[in-house]
Amino acid sequence: MSTVGQTVLGTEDSKLITLKNQGNLCCHQFVVSTDSIFYQAWKITILVLSFASSFQYAFLAAFDSTSLNDWSTSEIFYEMLFCFAMILNFFTEFHYPSLHKKEHHLKVIALNYLQTTFARDVAALVPFREIFKNANPRYKRLFHLIKLIRLSNGFQYLSHKVFMKEVKTAVQNRI
Image (cartoon, rainbow, N blue to C red; front, side):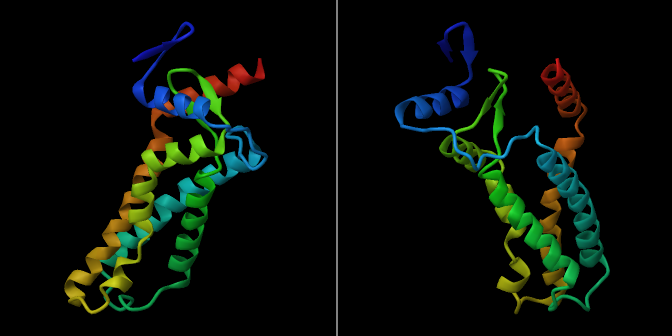
């Protein structure tokens, strides 16, 4: 741990701050604020779609063998929105847990996303069903279950700690 001023930083936070201090990183106009109405609506939409798509994929894995080779309209819709969500994550500010400060530098935001949930998001987005289209149909249905990783996004937002932190931040911003 390193100390900056009066604040004690974790190793991940200090690495990101060191990176920010090394380069000529400036705030960018394309950074999406987590306090904006657009982001709040988007977060609720992704939360609802995470649960809806997970129920659909669980159903397809358990009962439906007819759609193993075809992409339904809803699947294409889900995948397009989740792909857009991944792209948006590269431009969405984040909060340093130890500093209670928002990060607005694109390079640091992108590195933070790559170090945290990027791998999980990519794993859910890869069309394994198409990659292994010649697999045994009995096992091919299990590729739907990989999409259930998206449930972790929903549970992350529904956590009481995250919810209370968001309420506290909103109240502090209003004061």
